Every structure is written in C-alpha cells, then in structure tokens.
Length: 165
Image (tube, rainbow, N blue to C red; front, side):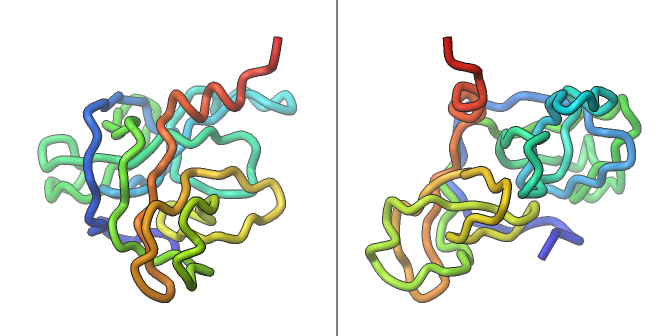
C-alpha cells in the first residue's frame, strides 16, 4: 500500500545522497521509494523531476529512498514534501539495504538472490508485473513474508537504462 505517512523501515544507510526537484503535485514521504521521470513516448513535461515510485511505468528510473528532515519538510515534522516544481528532496542513491521488510512472495531461504520489485513507494514483491522494473534483490530471508533487500543504486539503474553502443 502506498505511503500516507513517514516510512519506518530499518535500513543500512549508504554514503551517497543527491537532491532532486519534486514534480509539481507529487507528495513524497520520508522513506519512500522514488524515481526520476524520463522522456519517453514524446512526454517531456515531467522529465527530470522526482516522483513517488509506481511500477509498471517505463517513464520512471528508480533512484533510491527519500530522506526528509524537519528542516526541509512541508509540515515541519520531517515526514513529507509536496512538490511545486521548485522544492527539492534529498535521496539516498547509494543502494541501501532494507532490513527485515515485508516482501510479498518471500517464503523460503531460496529467495536469496531473487529480484525484488515495488508496486508503489512502499510495497515490495517478488512478482514482476507488466512493465515492472527490478529495484533490488533479496540478500537475506528472515521469515515468511519478510526479507532483507538490497536496493540498486541510482548509477546501476541508469546504466541498465542506457542504450547499448
């Protein structure tokens, strides 16, 4: 289910953060999975803007996990930002490890190494949908429905999106 409040995932933070302008009207919560819009199919008005993750669209490239602080939040409580085309959001783009998170379809230790997808900014699954993009892989099985997930870094995602020479 998509986020309606700050995400409380326990994760191993990375050491690389970048800041991106949020798409006007987009609401991004702390801890949300986020992506950048690409220009495809002639749609360019949102190109380069950050948005909450929605799987099944080939117009978003996965970036990482939104990091919002009290100082840059729209509520002053460090939980969300609402884009107006000028507001920026910090994103951990290093490829963090989410610890003991709910992963639909995770059922046994042989899930380790399996691709992980996200259907929205908060829901992880082992099942690919039409147009789905991998955002990481299982690094440790915890229990039925729970695993550690290593998210791909932004640079890994942009390399996989680049046309081959």
